[in-house]
Image (cartoon, rainbow, N blue to C red; front, top):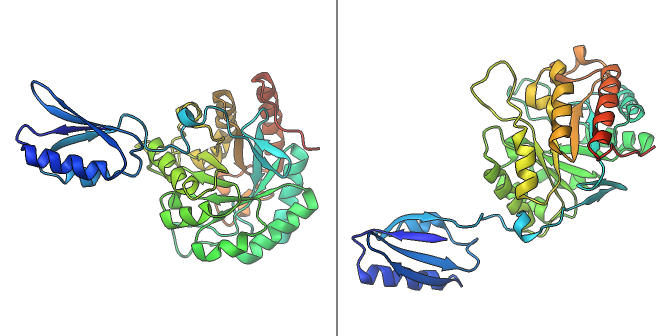
Length: 340
């Protein structure tokens, strides 16, 4: 970290600042230049608050030399993190496909969709038991009953389940869930993230609607700093000025996250575009960019879905998309996991 001092800084102000900084277990190096003076900090600066430093009258600006996310940073963990989820490995040599309905609506709907997803080659089952909706009058999910139905679908198909948590108060309900998903709206719900950091479960963290990649990685740091290193990053599209799609899928995020972090990266092409015809090309683009997995919405009757019907594939369409995903993943040297 480098602190640039104002030309008006007095010697006493600088000495007091250095004294405070060194109490944070870092070494300081004062460099006096022709036009400005700087203080270089050597050591672990993760816990140093930039805003607190800027509050000093003698400080002009502060710059980090290294990224503040150390647990998620590939510089400190050069090998890929590979997570084992019910004998499916994500982050390694195989591509995982998480598929299922946006919302769990009924036992019949979920079972029919889950079986179809398994037959098409999906390796995990997604489904919303709790649903964050823009309108309070929209379907909010079956809640605890939805989780029970997901567990029943897992027993029927053998597919590990992925479902979204929305509140600290619900953590106990997720005891038997295989992967806990944190949605875009909760990416910076720091109390929730810290609580999930104290549980021994894989966490799939979605990028916020208007969040930078560094903000996503800093949210990961909240989880990992509490001891849970089982984190999966998810690019699900961000809000831009383009109105023709629900969001804008940031394909470059896949490669950048793989470069900056050692954690697995999955892509959600359904929420990224909100348009069912774009799910296939965006899925293929994500595989070509090197993602570790996809999260695709599938519904046995999208026209009558209680949420996001316009972006959910029919089982028949999903089967056709999976054929292309498998072919491209094989070509890329990272075949879709064959779970039988």
